[in-house]
Image 1 (cartoon, rainbow, N blue to C red):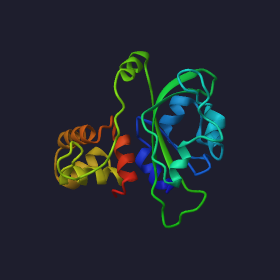
Image 2 (cartoon, rainbow, N blue to C red):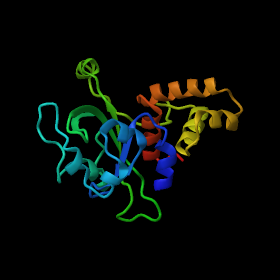
Image 3 (cartoon, rainbow, N blue to C red):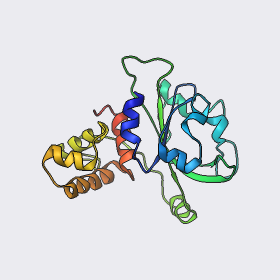
Length: 211
């Protein structure tokens, strides 16, 4: 599992970390360290709530032992599009937008397995004002007919290759198409799945079992 996450999210521009059902950090990528200043060794095995100390925009503590997010492991729906203030390793506050997704249980499922993936992006004040004016949107992954979210067979194929850690040029070579065509397909995928990055698209696809 860890090797798969490393391959998928190592080059991601989104900060990504994963926790087990108890909220203990088991995985971080390099973008996470750049955004929040914590190395994997500093966080590994720690409860994310005790380190990141997230609060909502009114300053009310959100992170804690009763954090609702790992409860997605027990069948509750994931929390998405959440804005919190986290503590950087040097003590200053960072406003981030968070997406969360559960990971489907693996055959070797145990307590030391990543259950929930978080993707983080820093939010600028102007972007926050725009976001506050927009109604919430529920993200779904479907290939059914009559939906904005319907992916074509080619888009499903490309997203599946991304889930399996392939980069843009590798996907282009595999499918004998140009890298620009691959990027165009990804733009369509982002629009249809209502996500903003490849990281979010991959996490959503993993959540729905697309491999």
